[in-house]
Image 1 (cartoon, rainbow, N blue to C red):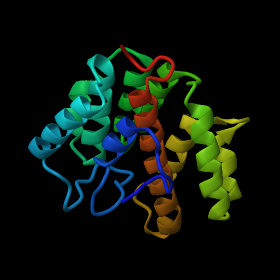
Image 2: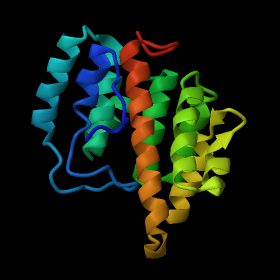
Image 3: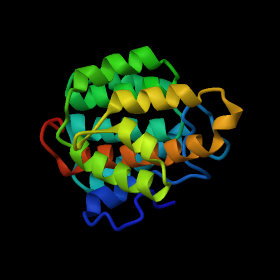
Length: 197
């Protein structure tokens, strides 16, 4: 499943995005979903992606952690996130706790991220999806100024948690979560500002 709807362009990003393939988008909660790849298979695929794009150190670990989290392997992803003290490590940690769901802990980790350079691009992509869905209320909650509001997204996920009547909104939030994973991987793999060593 191509979560971007467009060609990523950079070989390294494409190699990592190929690992975000599965039977369905990740749940907002922890899962596990049926049909996700086992940890051993993902570890081998991550090792191949590291080699394919010459990724090393913290950036390789961050990408690996995102792939493991995408496939609902929370314990393994958490082990990676808690060892990385950078803003990107906090971003991964925040995504993980949002899905746990531990919303207050997620907010703590996103607060440590602050206004990240990659959030403007994330906001642009999310705005398009929210507009396409005709959900101006959600767009206003998730886009503050021209930047992504991680807190707004946490609150939107929490509002949907356990509510059967929130299905259309939950599906839209899953699409937005997928965009966040994509932007995170692009930033880490392409070595954006502060993307690790």
